[in-house]
Image (cartoon, rainbow, N blue to C red):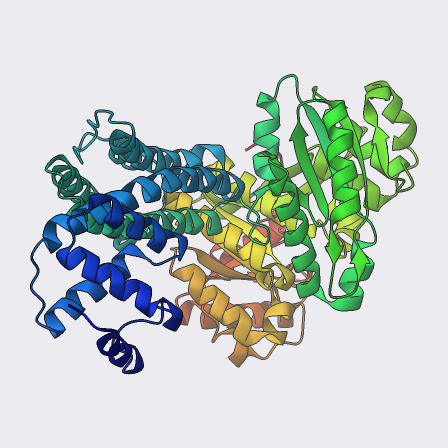
Length: 613
């Protein structure tokens, strides 16, 4: 028989984990003696119930019991049979609790990932619940074949960008789960409940690891997705524009954070990002699956009807508090039953609302918004153009002077206003660059350029500014486009203005090197427009130099300028860079740039920019 003195000594020597409280020593001692020698089944079950009430974990207790029995050379007697009786009580308690636990987990994952992605979690958790229920409710469990199960089939067909190590880890754990489930059921059928419980606890632990692996896969997929906002991890404007076409009999709710720009300015961009995350997380916790960050501080929420839109807005407007500065975030917004123009009308309604709380945009007819159009400022026009997806990509051909063919196009941003007139960059670019929606325009430019040239076998170039390169969201979006369209990436050139490259040499050079790793070419635009240090410029990782149009325009009448350009061309060629002449506006200039051994010509003499090539 075990004595209290022996257990006391073990406790003081820290032989076992801290899960055992000192006041429980005598209780455990009595229980161990019960398991060693008693044949009263009811007493053993009462002891097990007592362990559960005291939160004594089954796994830790069994390790302790084995250790103590061997430490004091106890005769095991009926111990093997009695610990199965003890384990059976734990099985009934633990398995029923786990059914509730897994149901809660399903609800949790609904908040974290989208419905489609949630499917793979649900399949695994439902599989685990079916395993438990086969024991608790004596049901037949047939799903033990690792190759035939739903999760294996879904994983093979799911189009995820998964790192190879994560993929192999997923496969290995999945196999181990099925093996342990098979072994556990065999033990249960033989009524070896202690061994069943031991295997079950290991299975449950590995299942948790498995769900973490799945979560990491989806997180990886989210972080590199062109449809996910990298700050809030919810769907972005591009995903919204795709999804809204398929929502029927639903209501659109747009919400905008009041005074967000002032908070951002006062407390900094990181604090602003924290607000955006807080808002996104709160909306998700309202069990709303379709939430989008449209841009900056504006969110779109899809709900069932106008009544729900008002209820949701009220909750959002009254319950999101910034504890750090004791500030209740407030909102203004609009809602409308979804139709062809709902997004645009809701946006117009908010522009006209003077930022009052919530506007019912169902009361506005589409033809009524013409009243607003004439009075819109350029800032408002750019915002509405983004909402209406009226940013256009025009393409200007670049003529190969060596082959006599058009082999490249430069993609140029244009904006169509509400009267279907096309605004040129000099009308809007300075204003746009100062707006919070600028990065959304850049992303749209990248996306539309890639999609346009996906099935057209031409090279193309996109202009980026330094602010684009320094914007985390923009660059993550660009990288994902390069990953999603690797063959298109090899035909893409990124252009950057010369003056920005000189001022921020290290940032630009590191960016160009990273782009090269994706097969993207790089170009320096408007070369010669600033006061560059040639040593700096030619040490950049460049494929092209584009000579500024003001220089090219002088070639016909300025001999010194021709000498300068010829020097630049020779230097570029010696470094394996090609040269593009911009603003080639007539035949005379075209012939001169050809004589100067320039590689490419671009300008109105070749063709003005057009929407379609």
